[in-house]
Length: 189
Image 1 (tube, rainbow, N blue to C red):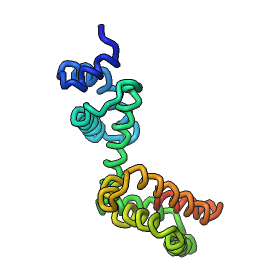
Image 2 (image 1 turned 135 degrees about the vertical axis):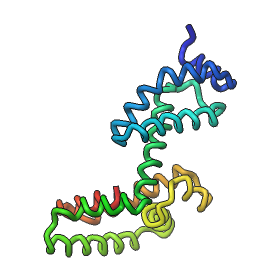
Image 3 (image 1 turned 30 degrees about the vertical axis):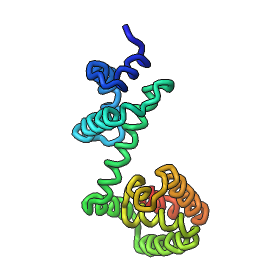
């Protein structure tokens, strides 16, 4: 019986039986991982299929020195993030989120909500120019990290680091008011 590392090496060489073996080992685990986040059977199945498609397409770049389990779950996590980001692009999901975010607030809190949006926009203007551009492409234009990286000719990791920096900067500037933090989370996370 081959070790997982040997199976991964066989996948890297394009051996379909080895790929099938990895699929057999991880498909159920990935399905439940995706379902626990997305709460949709169809979306969970899509995550599994897309994850293994990406693994097959990038099989030659897999580093078999590291645990394949970490790699496969990282790929699945990225697919889940992409699905969630696509959902946010759709108006229907935006309306649901906005309704949930504002459903329990009175008029005074609604005014605070508008003030929060203005405050966040002002804070975004204080970001360094490149980080501001990356943040706006992500949050306002709803581009994926890879789309931003391609558009700006930078690495995906640079985009990720810039977004993380921007979110921490905004959060630190908003202060500790619970309503403000709750709305911030609904808007940007």
